[in-house]
Length: 227
Ligand code: ADP
Ligand code: ADP
Image 1: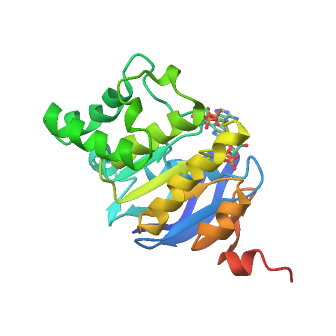
Image 2: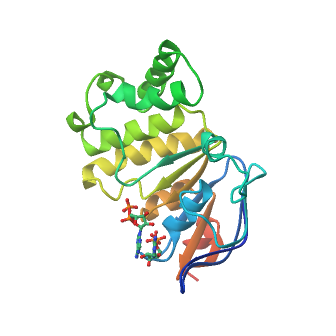
Image 3: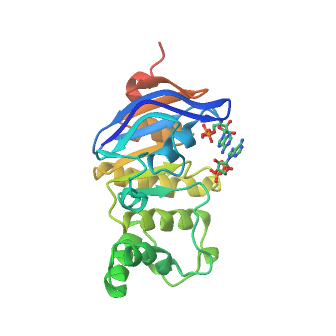
């Protein structure tokens, strides 16, 4: 479903991604770990073209991500993304944050979009917050809204960029639980996180990055076994 072949990403002389080769299958949960600054977030952001690659080949569902002719909106329709800092619209109610893209991009009616939004809000456990504003919610609740927003587009894959790093510790679990449920339901997921418990428990594969390279690719059992 996602294929990196000899992908390089340079900022001037700084090589943030070096010879990245990675294949992610449908239904797979890949957790990307590694030191800060090793290129994890950049690799994730290349998948939906928030960053462009310098060379190599990157495809999502056989769409070449970095072709001049690639329609970015079409590419991103199938890719949900959850950021560290939620990125919700503060002046819009929770439900309107979620219905925005389904109305605009998928062409749903307001009524259809609201039904979909409520379904996913219930799914992440915060249906009762639909008419509140993001600032009235805890960080963990806001992040669950962000996940519901991604899901409402019925994406083929969900990308998570350190989804719990900005949360107070007591809210980390509720977000990881939602992600775990999605994983168990067969969602294809690429997750950048420092939560090793999540990696160990939920990942099909752990990818370890350092200084722009993929150093190791292993099952959690292999990755966490002490040699
Ligand atoms: P990680 O997610 O592993 O912490 P990142 O992918 O965020 O790493 O960043 C990798 C490196 O690339 C960092 O050293 C960062 O400062 C650098 N970097 C990221 N974006 C840019 C940019 N737009 N211009 C220059 N350097 C960047
Ligand atoms: P977040 O924490 O929300 O992921 P970052 O602080 O990592 O955001 O990065 C914000 C933006 O700045 C990104 O677009 C990233 O590419 C860019 N950036 C990050 N590091 C550098 C850098 N060293 N030089 C230039 N731009 C950078």
